[in-house]
Length: 113
Length: 114
Image (cartoon, rainbow over all chains, first blue to last red; front, top):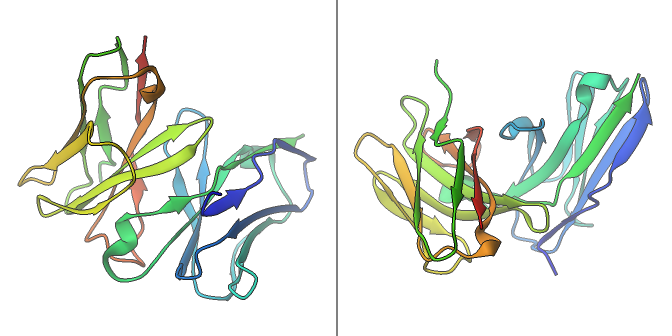
């Protein structure tokens, strides 16, 4: 069993839809949770970074962490065709572990105009 | 400010050969991490270097190795290549590798092993 599970999709939605992306994890020692976006033929870029449980909002993006359920989510409001990409959840421990990220499989999202 | 650069961008090798990939981090960044990305396994952590020392290591065989130079540039080497080593190899840099810092990824080197 992988430490981080993520539905690979693909997920196809119409423009303007609310998108929900999710990951579950098994290691309760994870404390820092991230969402990365990866466009085709590019490296991943950081979207959201949260610590422990709670919500964080940044524009159209909201990240949620529920440590009791070992479940994290990313919501995209008013989705745009430019949001079409692969979304990867990632997590790590504390201290000097910031350079060691454990990723989910990635969910391929397509937003249709 | 220049981003993370990786060379070469594409590489074709045959089984049994060895390969060296290079990564130049963002100026001022001293932590460099390497990842392997495949359709089946996703993004997997290989190792992290900080101040020329390997600080963290993933679960890859000893055929995968790396090093970091005094200018923070890093190389990774794969010896005795196998077909399953075909992947996108990504490097990422951050200032010190501490949690809370953003890791910036390069565009990757796509390796094909025939």
